[in-house]
Figure 1 (cartoon, one colour):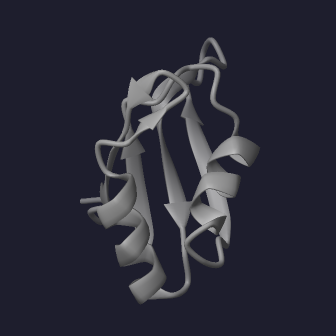
Figure 2 (tube, rainbow, N blue to C red; figure 1 turned 60 degrees about the vertical axis):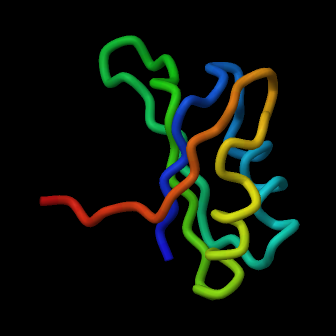
Length: 81
């Protein structure tokens, strides 16, 4: 399952995010979205977890949780249109 994480602190690294989600199960990837021109983080990311049940539990428990001073928005990512 692909998971969207929004309202992230701009200092969060992909490794930090991976560690948080690994508490719920296997993480196949963690990608922080960056501005193409400046290279700065845009404040959101995507995490991929192969097990849907583990991903669902992570979404339920991490949505609205505080991480590095900001309240995260965590939900299943919608496919690109």
